[in-house]
Image 1 (cartoon, rainbow, N blue to C red):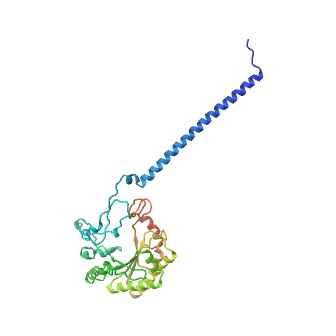
Image 2: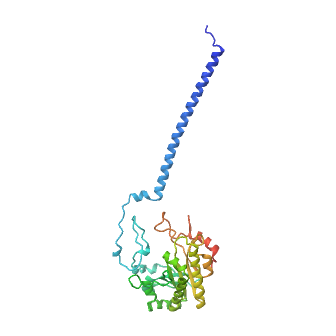
Length: 348
């Protein structure tokens, strides 16, 4: 008969089994940790791959890498005298409308029979339009009945407030030529006035340094005002439209200087001709961001603010999008007008 194990032996067996079981648990735990570690690595790599794919997809690099660059057309061989955009796929500086040529005759080749813009009775709202100098040879084909005010666009001013009339070679610039050319513009003004349409002249400045120098100099502002009023009086116009487009956030001095220019011009213009009108072109986000245009001050010292509700996306934008979105995702005309109307009366 086999002897039963004594108490000490049983205790030793129990301890050995306990240690063995603990080793088994630790071994299983190590395996689980290793599996989780490798799973985390795989998941991380998958997430990274998805993020890279999304970035490439959003930037359209996948398509771009597979495309062949299209050569830019020779613009010198394009028939024309003025401007239009040329759409090409290329890896070069974006092509803007102000840098290209256009055959102005083609702009008037649309079948007028397909155009349904009509009106009956008097217009109930202000309808402001621009008359570009490059259409001056086709004035007879422009329908004025849908406008209340039209502004000749436009005469550029320099840093001293003088009208830029000639190029660097001494050749007269087209905007100035058509403005003072006599019967062409005179007949247009008479026709517009006969239909009770106001005619203004747009004085514009798109050069950053010229804008800074002009608005921060009291003498330059005075020269600008003198020239503006002379232009109005010499052609029997109804007022002035100001189009100063300073890109980015200006300094307080520049912003205040532009406001001073408008205040001083409005005061002198109305002093000499109480019926004359002053309109200011402003960026649509001027009430939401710090721009050269201070809507609250400008609205109190002008007759009308013309909102430039475009250029939300340009050829230089990182993502494609609409040029002038009324509504939708991101910034829109309707959305920004909410801030605008908080500072400017709707009638302006």
